[in-house]
Length: 67
Image (cartoon, rainbow, N blue to C red; front, side):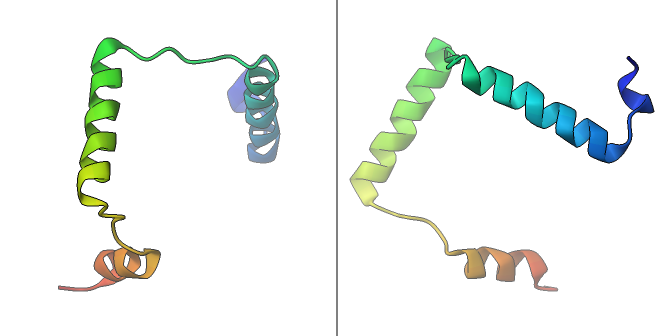
């Protein structure tokens, strides 16, 4: 089967089935030591300042503004 010969909707269905097959196996993705350290650093930064970030409306406004 050549994937490019499938229609867009057929490729979407194929991608969904592929993703479902990964989830069904309850596969875990192992992180590298660097990734683990970075995630821990980011979590600690959040816990320290409790900055929840920007709301969607604020982000959308920044993206769509013509400044």
